[in-house]
Image: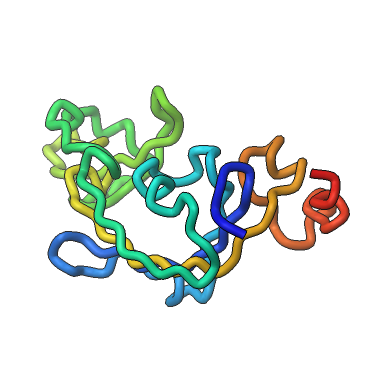
Length: 168
């Protein structure tokens, strides 16, 4: 079975930046990534590269910033009041998750200036060229529940049973 819309693919991946630094490796966690193809669970560039792949396929994919987390936007670096933060001891590099216009966003502390803090709301990997080494482990039809939810359900979930898959 090949990766296509309405199917769940399981894969291992290794993510590196343009300097060859490993940013993430699913094998280190011994936990493959499962995603529902065609439901915006992955970056579009990765989905395009995986479309039509079969279990056992190994591929390398490099994404330009525009195809990954976007280019850096310096207008997203700004100064805010220190009272906006839940901790007293702020240091550069600290990250917080906050609500944003398009959902949760990561805020990185750039500099602490007395009563104000310079923050960066760019994604931490914005502006980075990213390379993935991927191995496709399995592909299966999604269940009705997974299609309704828009992502794979954990194994053993009542709504992700084999019987549900047979109805598709």
